[in-house]
Length: 170
Ligand code: NI
Image (tube, rainbow, N blue to C red; front, side, top):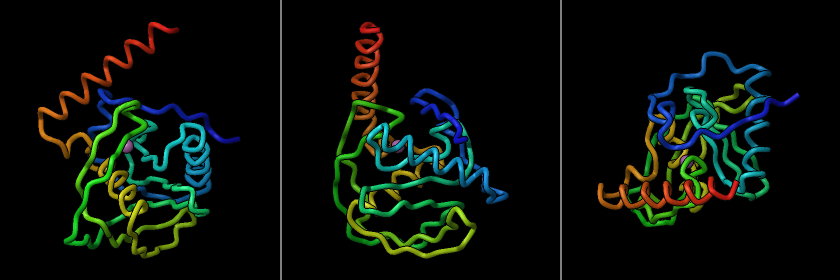
């Protein structure tokens, strides 16, 4: 049976940790990544990193609905393009707020998949974007950290406001 996951929200310390490498890629990790894909579909997200489900380890999953499901375990971004551009990002750990973030448009990444197999991937477009966002999570970094302090505080205030409104409805 797949574990039931709960997504950790901003303010939780686990989102600020420098995550540790995965030591063993086994069947329970594979099951966990499958549960993460289910959670992604349910939450209508495109990427989910381990610290977002309370596990400070270096792995994340990506599903940009291109027919592939990507698992990245102990990933290393080995190259990023000089060319950068903005794209509006959001995060399941800071639901309801979005902001343009400037990042390299292409990345080369090396990682292990859910079977422990090493692979290399050249990504551009949406895939490159999501990979960089999720990779940041492994180093305790959130997309709002790419913004100015003023913008970041604005985003957090907007998020808190939305949270309060949401709680009142319950
Ligand atoms: Ni995120």
